[in-house]
Length: 344
Image (cartoon, rainbow, N blue to C red):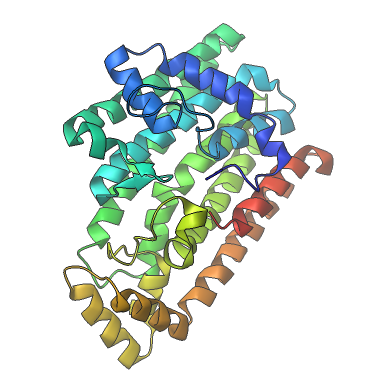
């Protein structure tokens, strides 16, 4: 599956340079680690043979570079930061697959299913360490040491929020009383924090003042909320052909937004049936279809789509408040529109 299909040109135009930066950083790691990391990135198979494609959609590094350019900066200077946010993202994916028991990613066995959980944890930890080594490369691009330190602080804060969000998300799996407000708080940390770091880092390294950096941070956070909600919709109603992995959110009893909404706001009969299904050890077969039917009848799908739209428009409003000419922010607006409408 071509996971880059449908991406706007403003995003894909940076992919080759991002890939080169990522490979430089990852290939600097010890061979026992780099082979696992290169496999996870889609650059080689489990036997070490090179593969075409890979690297994913590269949304976060693209947002970083587009934000840098919008602020008037040189994207080549910000490239190490773009690589760093992508490496943090992939660290989280490696660990997330382990924690969720997800056996596939992009139509291939997940890293942990081939090398085992302990080694996959090591690989994820290595990816995290490499993110900060990547960030330190900003000094080689002419970024002042104080600005490198501030960049590390911004990324570290996002990482803490990401880990907190993942803790909350895992905790929701054992609960049936999670509220929509609980969910939104979790999504703001697990997903939106890293997108906000991507856009604010880009604006900061592009020379933006404090007000502009704050505007870009809010843009990224609101965009991240819309992104996560869209992910939740795809996780229930998406197809494996589009996403690259089976729609496992219902079988795994993930408390994504549509499910949380259905449990909180569905009619009594719908809510009781949904609770019964989610008390089961596993949901499969016709039960999965029934969950989808209940969620649709409760209005959960419509609610999620409407809320994603709201966050999308808030993101655009934050971007418009940064004081830049419309031509500067047009590429970011194009990418935001794509993220809201994507089906993978």
